[in-house]
Length: 257
Image 1 (cartoon, rainbow, N blue to C red):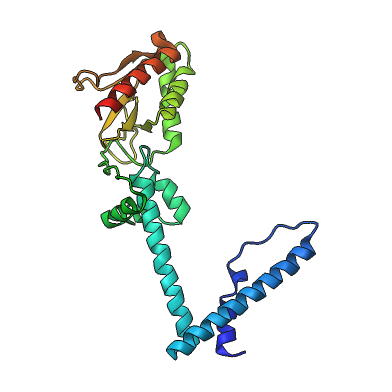
Image 2 (spheres, rainbow, N blue to C red):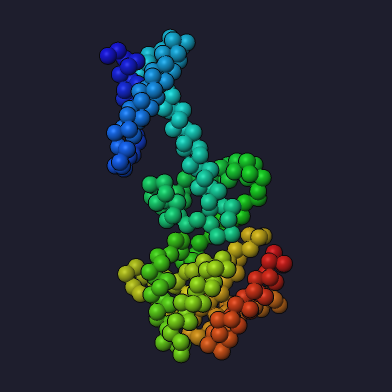
């Protein structure tokens, strides 16, 4: 086997393909797969011979150069897809979701793209990106769903209907709010404050927060601007009343954004 054939064999697509589930037509499928693999190997072999012949290059080096070009393209596409997921949605993909999809760590995802990638995506799709919100100590990203569920459970004793906190949470999620919980000031400690903070980003890039705590869903007391305040006594308003107030609040915020 010469260098061309050996290189084509190393690049054999069977080395990268997933196993095909067994079926009644297994033998036929295997025959078709074998024909496909041989055809692909012949294509790769022909490509190597053509490239190496034109450039008077070694087939191994030519194949490595091809793979380097593919890797650069994959890296570019990965960076831009991460930028798209983080910067072009009201409710951006979490770092955890992107990390699991790419096989990268969350830290590497955070630093895996930059503004030039964001600009490239914006130019490609003709859409303006949202600004990246700075994260604060009480605004972690992502939040473990178990932490949210645990906090909602801690709020249940303050309601006559213990299912209401979770139902309000589902309503807020459906309206595009993202949940956050307080963090302890020291590692290994448990946060003493009991609330779920719900954050929503608006078209102009600004955001607002609603606090779900002991029987109440409201904006922070420091929010005093007309139309930007929200307050609901959950048990008194009921789910329908909360939804109506949220619709009015969201409409006002969207109009002003």
